[in-house]
Structures are given as C-alpha cells and as structure tokens.
Length: 243
Image 1 (spheres, rainbow, N blue to C red):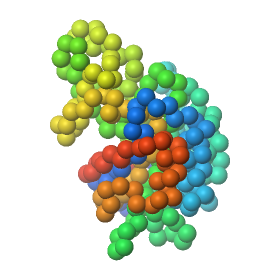
Image 2 (cartoon, rainbow, N blue to C red):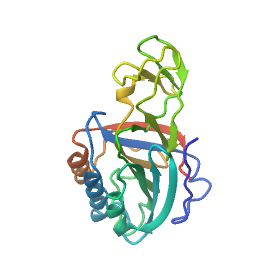
Image 3 (cartoon, one colour):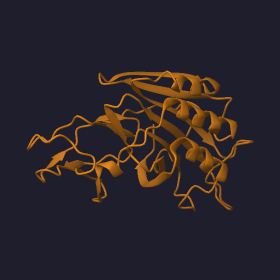
C-alpha cells in the first residue's frame, strides 16, 4: 500500500481532499541518472522562485533501501534542499502544500480566470540503483519472455511505488527487462516498463486539471530542464488527494 502522509499546514477542507488532478514531471529517459545534487538545486530553485513557501515547513520522508526502513520529519523549507543531499542509498521525498492566493506565491500553472486553490509539490529522489520509481503504478506486469501476466508486487512510496530491478518473472524466472516487459495501468493502457519508471520525479497536485497541457511557466520549465534534461509530463486525473 502507498505510504500516506498527513498534512498539518496549511489545512485543506474535506472538499479539497476529494478527487484531484496530479501532474507528474520526470526525465524522458528512464536510464538518465539524476543525481542528488541536481535535485537539491531543483528544490532550492523552486524556493527561490517563490513556488515553494520558504517560511513554512516541509515534510521529508526517507526509506532506506533495500530494507524499506522508513522515517519522516518536518523541517524548515530552507533546510530541505540540503536534506536531500543526505539521501544516499535511499528513496526520499520532500513535500509541501501551498495556496495560490498567498502573497508572492508563484503558480507554474497560472491561467487567467483560474480560481486557483492549493498546490501540492512533492519531489521524489531515488538513489542506490537497485530500484526505480513508478509514478503511475501498474496493476500487473507482462513478461516479455513468456508473455505471462502477474500482479505487481512493489514497495509503496508516497503516491507511487518502487520497482525492484532484480524482480524475476514468477512464471518462467526470466530477469526483468525494462525494454521488453510491460505494465498495465488502472486505465487499461499498456506501456513498456521503461516508459513508466524514473529515478526522480516532481509531482504537482491541483484541485482540477490545468488549462495548459504543458507547464506554461518558462522559468520553472528551464529549472526542470536543467535538472532532468528533456522531461515528460504525465497527467493523472480523478485520483485521491495526498493525505
């Protein structure tokens, strides 16, 4: 089951915690390594641009790999970029909820006439090489060797899961191959695993689907490209809000 996280500041009403839109931003090549220093600079850049609130705390969640030992702490936003650097050999996430109505707040999906609301920013950093992150978690996996489908057994982390790269097909025993094996999403869509995994991702949760299909804020886009290189955007609409 995914790891849940409790929000304490700011407070969202029950209406805010209904079904939401989540936009995933991730490198367009699963084999591209994104280092912890790059991710720390990305998070620091979001603070400097006013996307994240430097005056509020963020939550840091860390899972040691491969054991799966989990720890969580709240810390000042200004210290959170440095905390990411300490995530060697672990899966880490930093997360904060902000409101677009706050003075000085920068909304990367701002649009004229948009009612605004909350934005939930979560940066995922997976270090160690034994696992990769699945933002959109498949319900089952197809072995490219024997063609058999089997349920996915993955370690839940945040709103996604961690895929064990040493996983073998329970039917034929073939070692998992990202470029050959496939995953089926809850929508029924089927993709190669290499199209579904990444070593880092930024999720932006909004109360509704944004007007623009792609991130319209040039400064934030440039910041993402500096960290990820070319990046993809995955839309996940009608999902439960992070709690």
